[in-house]
Length: 82
Image (cartoon, rainbow, N blue to C red):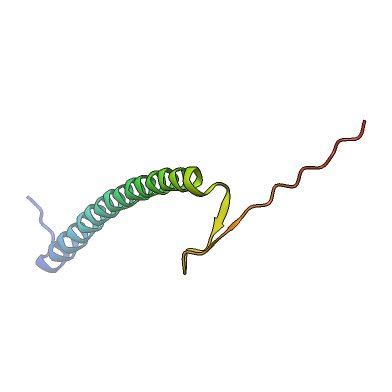
């Protein structure tokens, strides 16, 4: 049976192993991305819940997230003239 030279076989094996490691890394990164997206969704839901609680307590306000100050949002009601 014919065989590759030892150096050729080594090169094929190294490149094959490197390809398998890269595929494995892509899988891990894809899983990490999925988990980060899931955590982002959870964070967004928590933020929306908090916004609703604060809106119930303070009404419609703009909040400065740096220092906690807030200002009331003025509602512009224009008279409709028919």
